[in-house]
Amino acid sequence: MTSRASRLLVFDSGTGGLGITAALRTHLPQARIDYLADTALFPYGDQPDERLILHIVALLRAAVTEFAPDAVVVACNTASTLALSALRAALPGTPFAGCVPPVRWAARLSRTRVIGLLATPATVRRPYVAELQATYAPDCHLVACGARHLAALAEQAFRHQPVSREAVSAELEGLFAQPGGERIDVVGLGCTHYPFLLPLFRELSPRPEILWLDPADAVARRTAEILPPLHGTDGAEEPDRYMTTSPHGTDAALLAALPAYGFRTAMLWQPRTAEAVLS
Image (tube, rainbow, N blue to C red; front, side):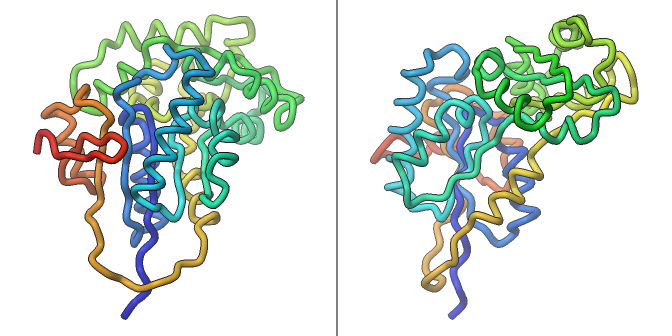
């Protein structure tokens, strides 16, 4: 008998956490992964903070109870900056790895000491971002942009659907047109959906030397660090599951893309209920 594989639960509001899932498969190739996309409430930026905290805690409490993961990866910047502390308090026996804007990493790499942050409005407006700068980048000027449409555009890019260059360019203009924007030399991506648009970001960048930081690899390495020692042996392992909280967004293009991330199909999941949809 061999020791059983680690079981991870990756959580996001949509497909953004799949980039982190790909990094997890590189760092933890033997791990079994359940992915939960909270499409019923996508996008999170449209929700009041208190309601969102209660919702995320209740949803993940039910998911942890049902799936018993060895660790949970909150692969969503909005959920991490808002609810990670509440999740750890509500589920003290479960290790959590969060995903926060890479302000510290950007400060390490910046030569101009002007760094950019591209994130959702919900992430940018929270005090957590200012606290990150004060703690890890006090000598840097942080230019932050709350992009309203990039997450939806990234969902299109993930599905290999046409993405408007003009729409992406307009969102980037909101970052680089701000005071100090002309001196930005490093941009941290503060939404896990955005790496699906990285080729366009680089192409539309006002300067080719600007660095774009995707924290997926760092989140995967942190997950490997927090995994507890495993007990028990291999049994009848469940296959990796991609689950959504509503049929919204579960289309043919999504299903065609999922195998590249290790998932065969998508399932509709609600607390105590999971049924296959669109195989």
